Image (cartoon, rainbow over all chains, first blue to last red; front, side):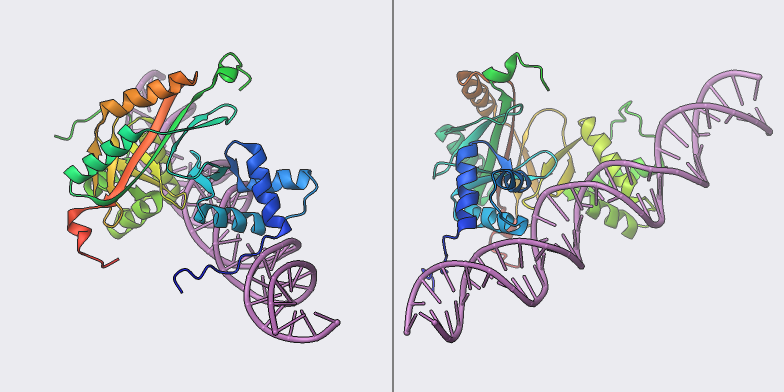
Length: 136
Length: 136
DNA sequence: TACGATTTGACAATGATTCTCACTCTGAGA
DNA sequence: TCTCAGAGTGAGAATCATTGTCAAATCGTA
């Protein structure tokens, strides 16, 4: 019942999606994952890519965030709560932790009587490799 | 204190959209703004609502963020950089400031060589009015 | 090896957002 | 006041990510 994990089979397709995320390292959209898999010769349906990414996200094995235009992007991440420092040019991502921020958000929320507090925090910038590169 | 900014906004439609946002107080999607305007008897095209909201956002007169499902939501806000404490049940929103967070993000980004740093931070919770109310 | 449940994938459907383009409005100048 | 040009509008088409559908493929197990 509660701990009744639905039988999940490690299929070739799901492994391919997970592997692609691992090797990419940056945030990638479902569409781009699908495109790259196809390039790499892996035959995986688009719907399956979406389903797998959602399953991975639900399982907490990947992090999800939204681009400015609302597209969902996924990234294989270390487990546990953390935030991201993302290069807006090349997508290179660094996972960062900020205990002070966690306590601050909780305190602010509590001051206003909010409970069950969660938060999102992402940092965007231009990384060293891209600083001089005005390649757009 | 409805200060009239010199931002060009002379048309009835644009004023209607801005006014609706003001009176709503919470974050609202373009679709819902359009629906409410229609209910209120205002005739404004959907495309115009989108255009106006984007213009307001570009002008910094409203804040934009994305819901979990990627929908863009807008809210009339005080000028200047701030963050939001949003009730995930009723949408009530409190604007908060955290100078410590600003400096932290800048420092972390700098440590990793990132420049032109920006960040997003939103806090979600259940407000006092909604705490006992499991009305969903 | 056969069976049943799970997973897949091609395609349709959805829904938010953007684009198109003819029409309307407004303001400046004649 | 009249005229013209350009900004603004809106109905509907187009776009695009995402989700739903469902028959066929696949896997674990008896």
